[in-house]
Amino acid sequence: MKIIIFLCYLLVAGLALLLIVILNSKPLDKDGMINFREHELIGVIYSSSGSSTGGYEYMSLMPDEHGELWFNYETMEANGAPIISHHTKADQNVLDELKTLCRQKELLIMGKLKESDLILLDAPVTTITFVLEKDEVVISSSHELPEHAQGVFSAVYNALMKLNPES
Image 1 (cartoon, rainbow, N blue to C red):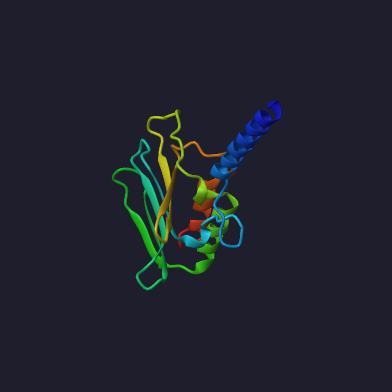
Image 2 (tube, rainbow, N blue to C red):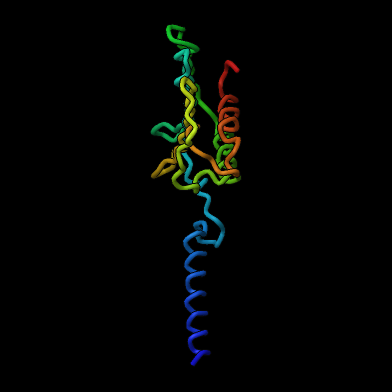
């Protein structure tokens, strides 16, 4: 009788462990590889605003209705300063670089991010929106990022700035 009870406990513990593994696993694609969703990425939007001077910076790499990639850049250093803007056609290389970044840093499968407890008044807020075919993933400087996602803001900024004719 003790053996049967022990085997029942063992079975229940094994099922509980299996459930934990399934719930915490990353999604798999049809080849059994982790699906990082980077193949769904069609565009990226980077914006930084809210500093004490009132300035902002906005960049987007998005396809038009024909599937051609366009880079848009707009910045204003401070309230009342002139707005500088560019709109140029872009090639696929930077989007491919951003897809690689998304895979390496697991950016598109992080799930809901926790807001940071630390709030700095007059600090600019930077937001990156990864635009997918049927969804979007938003990462903000007000989020607590996991260790593997550290450095994402500067990496995306540097990649997009390669398209800016003024840089």
